[in-house]
Each structure stands twice: as C-alpha cells, then as structure tokens.
Image (cartoon, helix red, strand yellow):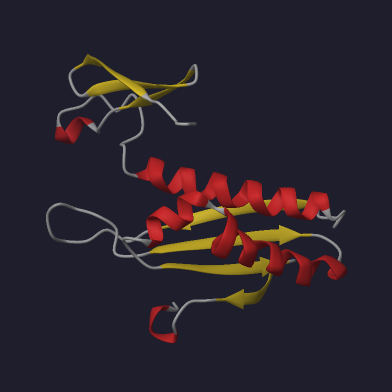
Length: 152
C-alpha cells in the first residue's frame, strides 16, 4: 500500500518545519499573531498543492499529445470565511496559457480532464467546497465554470 507521510517538527514560538520526502517547508504566522513570519501560514499550502497538482496534469497532458504551449501559470484564490474556524468559502483556479491558437481547445480539455478526473487534490477539496476554474488563453477569457453571481 502506498502512502504519503509528512513529519512536522516544532522549532520555536509558532514556527514548524514540515519534511516531505526530504523537502522542507517552513510554516509560521505573522508577528501580529505571535509568530516571526519566517514561513508560510499552513492553509495556503492546500492551495499550493491544488495549483501544483492541476498544473502538472495540464502540462503532462499537453506534452503527451505534443500540444505546443509557451507558458502556463496556475493562480488559485480562495476567499476566507468570517466565522470560526476560518476556512475557505470556495476556490477559484485560473489557468493562464500562452501558445499557438491551435492549442486553445486541447488546453481547455486538459484543464477539464485534470479537474474532473486526474487531480486528486481537487477531488479531495471538492468534498468540502466548490472549485470553479477559468482559462485565459493568449490573454483572452476562453472558458469558465464560475456561476454568473460569482463572476467579478
């Protein structure tokens, strides 16, 4: 059986270091809440995991099918709730790709496949909240799953 393991060790104050297969991530909180701001707060690491997971999916799909692209960025935004415990209301993923026009449709399909079938992080997070995604291709909005009331 495969599994992932993370060992997190207290350093001092509110600073911890997580060890993931030898890769270290420092977590801390800002000084205003008792930390020393020497690392990220923990919650955004969920968003980083999502952006990395789906970004790797999209890049690997496009590479596998020899679909050319020049750049790929994945931005993830998640508004915080105002109630305790503070969580995310929803998650919004923005894929920004640059490349030849012929790559637009395959890029949309790759993102859709990642969100619906491949990205385990998205699957897990969708058990708790809504994830919408949008694609900007060569600077133009080409796809979104956002409900009209959520669009800004």
